[in-house]
Length: 207
Image 1: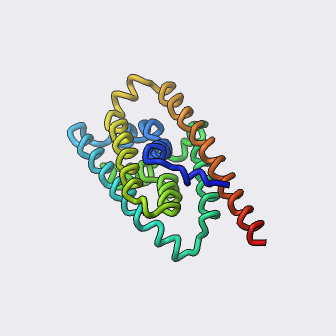
Image 2: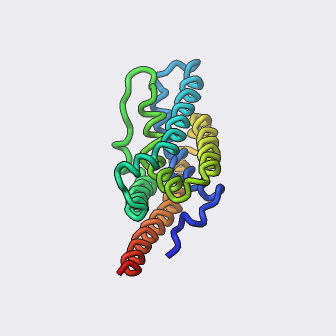
Image 3: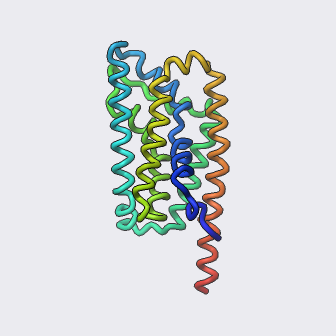
């Protein structure tokens, strides 16, 4: 069974990362976290946190594979685990009410946590990066470009969080997040099936 990631292109990788970053779902969290920040500082804080998130994603893109090698995690296990993680994230996107516990109360100006990590550069994005880079590490330039594209699109949406929140309203944001969640569910299930199927075929072939 051919893995879903075998045919992954720059565009599909960027779209997958964009869905996982869930910028529309993060809008309410950014708005809430910035309420206690002086209006003159808000744009500076957003730009700084987005830059930190990008740095974290790029570092993980290059350090994730050596970490897996040290831990002796197989590609099949990673595919199944990644699919499960993406599925759980997608469920939270489809049912936003269950995500209420994800909001973190902070005092003063946020720094790194929770805006950069985990809202933008969260566990789901890092797990996706592991899946991508581990499959075809020689294409790291394409994967880096995919990270930059997904981050730029997410950053554009998050930078406009306040006006988008007013225009779309709570119902509009929920609808956008649910749509992205449905797409991610399909990707997650396919990823899990491919990981389990390729492991089975390897066992049969080895037997």
